[in-house]
Length: 146
Image: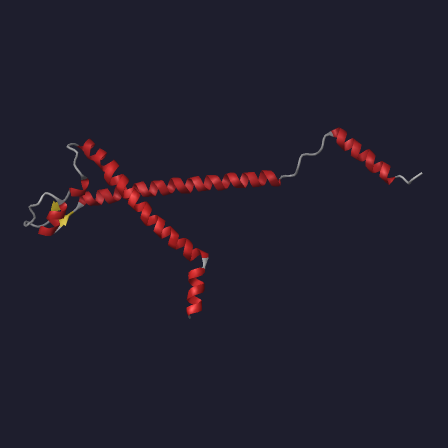
């Protein structure tokens, strides 16, 4: 069973998946920073007053009197729609970046296939004078020696 497990772990696709998950987690941090530090302040400024969406919420309990989401969650139930908007924007940016990456990879693959097909195409026939000289040579070779 241990050997089977070693064979499973050593398979290429398992290692590729592990690398993908690790890179994805790191990439997620970059996207979160883009959204939280670059996009959301601009969106907040455009909506007026420079508000941060992450602190938009509706109190679901009369005990909630706080103005920040973290403090309001300590006081009771809240409907944190601003946090959802931030996560949604995170997702859309991440999905867009992945779309652009896949589109680029597909374009690169298509370009490589075109190059491969162009290289595999039959070579152009030689010029007429070379063909004529080749025919004369072949005729001379086929004549019996005198």
